[in-house]
Image (cartoon, rainbow, N blue to C red):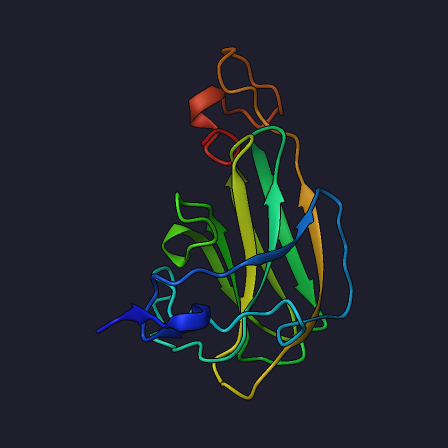
Length: 173
């Protein structure tokens, strides 16, 4: 049976919550981040959007992100030390940093990964890096790039991509 244990630890569940340690913004570019640092948790072992069947028994690290306007977001990772690490973007649910809110994921290829998603204005997202082994960790650099968004209710193509309002799915959520 899946359950949360005393002290916030989890046993075989994807219902336990991660915890974002730092709120990041557009153009943030933190370096030498690690999955096993002081703010890391070992709460989540499965993510519904990861179809690989991998169990993530190692520590995950999560960073918060919220955009003031609806727009496309690209999160790039470089210098990733562990090729088995995986990146997840979670949209906050009523529970917070919840793996059931997964909107995007990426594997690490050649020590790098890029994840793009449409951020809705004023909605909290969590950028999570997790590793499969309980004794594994990963070090990485991250950059957040925010594109020009669409004003989603003015019948105009504000970001000049030939898509108007609700047809611009990368901007309007």
